[in-house]
Image (cartoon, rainbow, N blue to C red; front, side, top):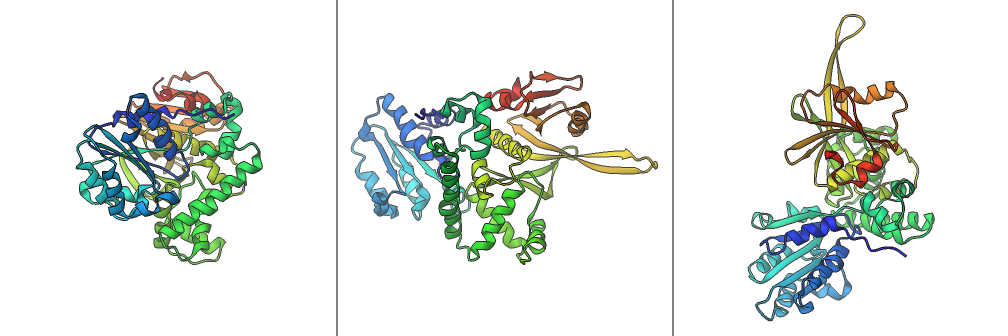
Length: 419
């Protein structure tokens, strides 16, 4: 039987935001557990704090029974009619982006002194271009990701070493844990992508060429962790599929995928020049299981999958993550000066701390270690430099100050970067 996964990392953020005068907005890819966090875990917390059940007003706006409440005025009047005294009321609204002009409803609720508002949404646009400035300054975003590896291990009650293969294949969407066979898991993920994510993006953005968009998603899935940009992708369509699609259209499609939290973009950062380089970016999937299902479990290269999972874990912890580039100048065998760009997998910023991280599947010998260290050794600042290797090893720091740790240690300990 599946255990209840606490998701304390996110629950605590909701608890910390109680009565702060802001609307708590839980965002994330569909089916990652937003409703469960709000309607089950947070509700349980409120009840334990002796909040009367009648003072918790929860509405699932994607439920057929709530169809009439998708009208903004009807929703507001319904909520207002249930506020009967001066005691605190907690308003929990799931998938609020389904309500036209919902920002007016939320702003109106903010004006009621004894109301504390919590909402979920599966579309980042309702935090940006669709929202008036007045509301954007009054929202407190909590980004929810699919289950982290530590949460997954908790849910399946397996040792990390045994859980890794399933996790890096089927990802961390909570429903996957309740499915018993590999076929059921793959069918669930494939159907979820085809009938929910893909349809949702196409319909919301009125995409006319469905096949073109679907092909682009698959190309991105095939190339996680590879530097690319709209122009490069446009050339791929021409050379591989003999299809002409402009870089402007591709850029728009990529934005649609990011708006739906399907993928995230990591920009390239010149470490020495301390500036962003706009030429190429990397894209990672919010859930590696969805990525794998899109490709029918082909291209299961563990190097890139591991890199994607590390990226997601860093983002889950609230870090800003870029892809680093370090320029290396040297004299070649003919005595000529040459320039070479060395890559740092992740430049990680967390508050006033920075970390440089390399994701490495294995370090079988000293030559491989030197290769992976090359970019880190060219960085002259004093921030921590880390190699995360898949092998289970005892963490250690070498004479250059480079810290090497195992993947399991990194994923299971939320404070692993500071050890």
